[in-house]
Length: 242
Ligand SMILES: CSCCC(=O)C(=O)COP(=O)(O)O
Ligand SMILES: [Zn+2]
Image (cartoon, rainbow, N blue to C red; front, side, top):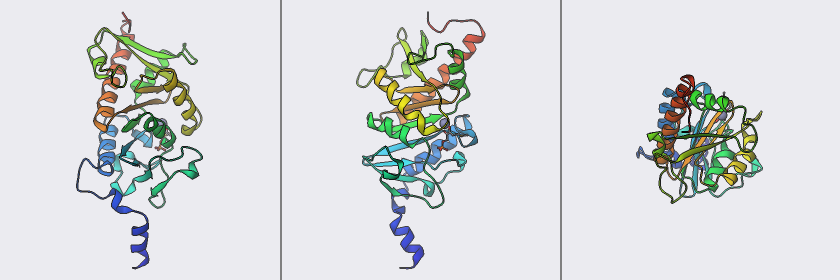
């Protein structure tokens, strides 16, 4: 075997090579192209991670997310230590790339049983965190009711979906200087709101997760729709909660 072949064999490239469009190594680049076009992951920010069985697929850090290819994807053996980062069980590491800085946050969602976690820098998400800026602290939440699209968000695991007359509550945590340092805030919000499938990060964006990739994506779409609507409602002086 020549040295190049040895590199291929030891880097487990087969884990990211599949003809199946639903394979996570194909899905992550495909989703990131969509997310880029929706303004969710421009300028290298944001990203997504998928768990399939005992493998976690993670995008690289600081790259143009819309140009990502399957061979750029990292693979972690699950379960894996969250900290320190050097103890994480990578079974595939693309050369010259680093795994997403969001990795410990994605792992936090997987610890809750998620199958996919999406991080966006959507301007609508950022704007609603600014509109509730006065409510700092552990109780900061975005709340809205009487909007049809909140039916796209689960009430909690195994509890069905929210109804039109329910109030959707998304906790807001404060931003930190480094993405990794958001992890304790995300964990605290998940403990305080065990039914939530999303956490907003003030002046930064949002983390949304779901039982599988389709649910994470549609929940993220529903939330983004609701945030845009909420910003427009605010401009018109309309209240979010009746
Ligand atoms: C301009 S991006 C700043 C860092 C950030 O918020 C982010 O989401 C980047 O994540 P990455 O996956 O590129 O490490
Ligand atoms: Zn970010």
